[in-house]
Length: 473
Image: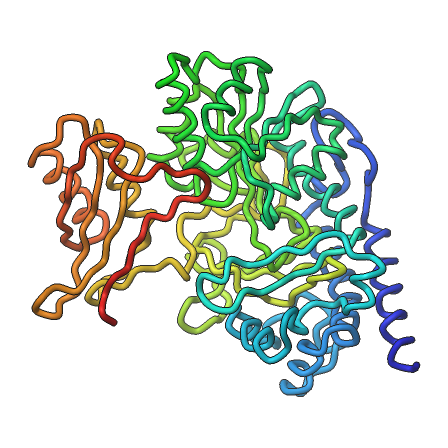
């Protein structure tokens, strides 16, 4: 009974702090900012909010997550030892391998979240899961309280993108356990936004929806936006002359890969907006763009600092790096009843800038946005690079199609090699040489390039799968 009381008390204390900082929860305060008090908070004000929430969330974690309780005890720490942003370095960065081990030892849900079976049955809203592509899938059961804060935080982020009542949004996904689009859908409710459901359709049916019902915002992965635009052209329609004014992307990098972003925007004749985040530190978009994200010399993505704490760490030492230095993203989630993770390694490379944005926000910005998650890093004969670098190289050659494939194999001499398969109407050695040169310039690695006729490679229907690793490792 005493344990149950402590769990309830820490939850109640955390909820009080959340309510204290939930300004303009039900509706936007003005046309520019959903919540001026939070969106334009000073650096000191943001730190004060983070400290207030962190001091409440660590006892909540300790009492409600066996995984976190064990980690605190192993580190000889108590929740009061992690009560401010300055205390965070005491807590070693948490990566997904620890969660996988916990999920394996405690199937099917693991113990790394803060709700149990009773909570799930009484307050549960929706279950989401990691892909499991790098190990055991990690499952996250979110509650209706999570959903309410998810609606609010994502609505604030979409408001920053100039998405407004009067827009009509067309989400183009299958509505599986995909946190990004479900978060967008509940935020659309808070925004009072008109939505045309886009699940269960092929590309031609979706083109028909765009042509007939005139949505102003389409939401999907950047790969699918390219594919859909090409299908539209094949049907005799011009995407750039459609009703679409905003391409709202997520699930893959778009803003940070300039050649891809430019290709999408040229095809559709409109702007790109982007969410950034991951399943583990929902329920909200951690990163979002604003109208100024493409206005300068370098694109960027804001990170919501009143609901999360964002750090960058050195990939080798896991020590915090300074603003302006490149590192991997680490997130502490402060607003989640189900998944308030503490220093979770999201693992995307970027650099941070805390100067005030032209939009008036002081929330930290990821400069260059995000182009590569550490899990995706390719190591070929000691040379390391990201698929996004290959994507930049491929897109740099005129006439190369939207689809491409990276094939890693082991040759007869036992050497690991890379082949790149692209499409081009003219084909020929000149195209192959141009792509190979771009790759060599950007990645400092040699690759054999195979040029195929258009429509040879599989078309991307949702998230692109560009890498086929067949090496004998």
